[in-house]
Image (cartoon, rainbow, N blue to C red):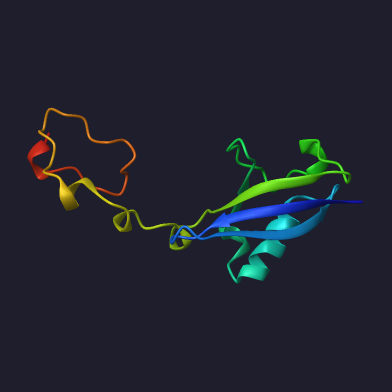
Length: 123
């Protein structure tokens, strides 16, 4: 028995894609990652899935362990787990591109992990 799975992915250019697959209820989700990776010509180790609530799925678990049944359609989001497939932070609008740097006493934005702190904040 299999469960129908719709895997949604988004590119760096914000293009959205949906891939339809199916996986056996009593085989690890790794099988789905392998199929997705083969179809999209990436390494299986670079594929991660999360549910619609943003919970990362363990690819060693069985679909049945997540409560999925063959009578339903499951929607998953795919994300890269390896750096070479991830979005490059510098391609996003950065504070340093259009705004003056914040004073040293102000906290740095938490969402900009790829932006280094100004040199004046040495400690």
